[in-house]
Structures are given as C-alpha cells and as structure tokens.
Image 1 (cartoon, helix red, strand yellow):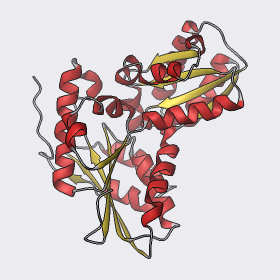
Image 2: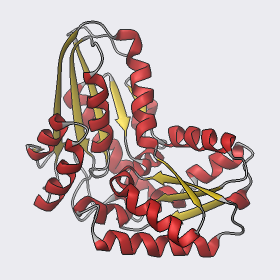
Image 3: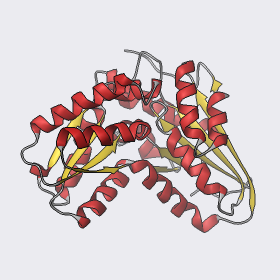
Length: 305
C-alpha cells in the first residue's frame, strides 16, 4: 500500500451504480469503532458513464473495458487513493482486462474472489448444497463464479447460473417495490427450471452488490419457489472484512473520517431517497453524502462507439 506521507488514508469505492454504497456504509460503520491513522477519506465514485449507457447494455467486452479503464485512471488522477475497492461484480469481471490493472501501483480489491471464499465456507458446512448464483448478464455470462467454483472441484451439476437482467436498476429505484419482487420471482423460477437436481439446501449468492438491498425479498421468494432451506451469501460484508484486515497494520490514533459521493450521472430523487434511508441504518454519514452527492459531468471520458 502507498505510504501515508500526508497523514490521510484515501479509499475509493467504485461501482457501475449505487450498490457499492452499502459496502461504503458498512465500512464507515466499522471504522468508527476502531482507532485510525490520521484522517480517513472514503470516496464513492460512480463508474457509470451515462444513464443510458450501462455496462450490461454495452454490446462488446472491449468497449466495457475501455469505459471502466477510463474511470479507473480518473480515480487515480483525482484522488491518488491508497486502496480501490471494486464493489461491483460486473466491474470486477471487466477489471481483469484493463490496461489500468497492468500499470497501476495502487492496491485494488475486487469482490468476486471474496464471494468464492464465502461460498466455500458454506460448502464446508454442507457439501451437498446447491449453489445458486444470481447476478447481472455480464457477471453470469462471463462464468467467472462458475469456473472458479469448478476449479475448486465443485461439481458443475450443483451450480445454477442465473442472469437477472435489469434487476439491479429496479432495486436502485426502490429495493422493496412490487416490481422487484415480481422480477425476482421470475428469475428464480427460471433458475429452478434449469437445475439438474436439488439438495435440501440452496446456497444463494448475491453476485451483485445491489441485491443486498433486497435480500429479504430474495430470501423469501427463493424459499417459496425452491421449497428448500435457503442460505444467503452476500460478498459485500466479506469485502468490508478484508479491507479492515488490510488496514489493521497501519491503525494508530483516531482522527477523522469523511465520506463523499461522486457521479457524472444525475441521480434520480427516488433512488437517493430509498437508498439513503436504507444506508442510514449503518451509516448516517454515508447516507448524508449520498443526499449531498457531487454531480460533475466530466469525471471521466468515454465514447459510445
């Protein structure tokens, strides 16, 4: 990790939407209970280029990489962070092919391997469980989770890979809406129809940071549709734990924690209202930062073609 010459630790949390704010809120909550080195600056950077140009709507892998690469270089140039948390499964997939990954000396933590660790822990408790992977088209179609699990000698027949197009967008508008519930039920029915066999337990991995906002809807719907014991796995918490572990060696005296939110996409009032209310339970500070987010049109460059 970079040296703390200016007595300030800067952590950037980035996502292709606002799901990663839940990671930021939980991290701020945990940091409040610990002693710290000087000032800690938490920065949320929305890597969504435009409201009508989401990563899952971009047709080519190369263009997704190009857009996120631009965002990452802007993050580095603007903030010179000590740590970047990619609190997004979609962007964790895309990151692997970026030029930024090859060139940066900034420490970067993605979320997918943390999700795999959590699934492994649950499988150690019950090795016969099915694994249901719920995520965006980019995450699921990349087979990142599935292939990593197979490499761990987990039978492919136990794994159910379910893409949930646009679910994250609806969750961002209102995580508890009837539309989110109906979409979730439809995706779970699709997942059930493709399963080769079912054990008594289904480990359900939320492979999108947005899904945690609707965890109870997902849990209850899965219990009804699968008629099995459902255990939810949320990698968001694991990311916070791993971050705290990495920071442990540099903690000293408490000074100050600040939180900021940056976006070049204008956020909808209903998104801000619904998510800030949920986030407030963990972190009033991050909730306030979302309500007072900094809208800047040209945070990073991108082209549509």
